[in-house]
Length: 592
Image (cartoon, rainbow, N blue to C red; front, side, top):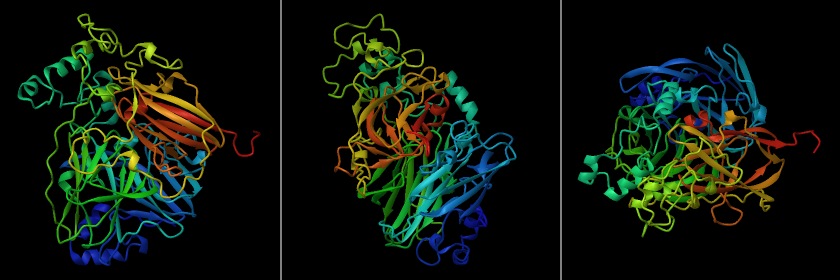
């Protein structure tokens, strides 16, 4: 039988008194009692070989307003699924919606028929029907689950997964908290997408202004303004949807509600951080408290101490913190465009708070974010940059520099297999590997920031064969039309799937030809980021953020036969075309 559902808000209310904390301890299995006696786990938890989930409609209240959510078992986020490596699990999912639904087990290595992508790996779950997912648990770590149907993920259809290792955990800790980061809007996601289609900058209320130019607040010179204006591009187009409509949540709580995780001073506290948002990349910090990163996307890495890190959509990071003293600490999840933040607290007792830092200044994009200027802007004729229009060189572009009249849609810049049509408004001229660079907005902070090249796999990579071939995939889009795709084509254009031979070893390079970040996720597999780190210890990821105007290379062993989704995890980007299918053949029992 599945564990009875525990209502998170009831638990929080009941735990305010000290006696409530002690009373709750008996409701939870030993592994969920996060550390010392008297303190408890923070999310309703389901465990065991048989788990029941029900997808339905719920009211959701945050910031004093109530909206409509799609939830599992009536809570947002959905219950924490606590599993163990080596077990089998049977998850019965009942759909109480009036439309199809689904659940994808993000990062879990499952048979492709259990992966949960309608039209790719199964037909979906019809209204008023139950579908049973059943598979062995082959791994351990921090993961999550979410809908792959009809933008339901943006409405609350997501939840965390923690899988305990079969043997001793190499990460030592006294207590843990799972932190599910997400974004919430009272505007229906289909309405959000419609507004983006009509006006891609609809939600950007932080554009540069004349007053900002005169006051210096925009931190841009007149020449830079002329340059961006000539290109008809916005240097503050960092997130398509942001804090102008989103409330940023941590475990379903808005900033004013102050979700609190408890600790005893001196304990090693493990924070399992999941970015379950639809469209938001966050910068994570706990002012004054160092964090030691020990896991990325559920895979253990060599510990690296930082003060801040960026977590893109669908990534997970586990960190160890060791708070001391009888004081509280603020956990900040700041949107990368600084339009809002999520806020939570670590404290020895409920009700304690710490100072909440103000939002930092809005970052400006640079030529590096357009796949240019990797040697610096020195000597570049900004006036000539007016010719870098999305389609046609400006009539008054001064032809005094090699870059004058540059057409960002020039097919000559594109590889021969890219479709350069209305779906492509930019082709990066000189995309660079930026895995070792600090991410957007964190280039100048005066503390330690995690970069991808800091990640080193704790265990040796299982497959250390050299790749037998290489492949290049371009991430493309037309920002003015809010069209997205791979190699200039949307998925709706009946593109050919990406084909791999089973157990083939391939080096894949993703080239971002756009000014937006794209967290790219491959179902059913982990890939090894080529970071230049210690040989045989490349970090394993299932999702990688490809920065604007950059390229990312990874090595893939295509060891999972079947058909797998491959897409940008910005939900609106995926829905607008940045999606494809990876096909691995032969299947089990099929002829080679």
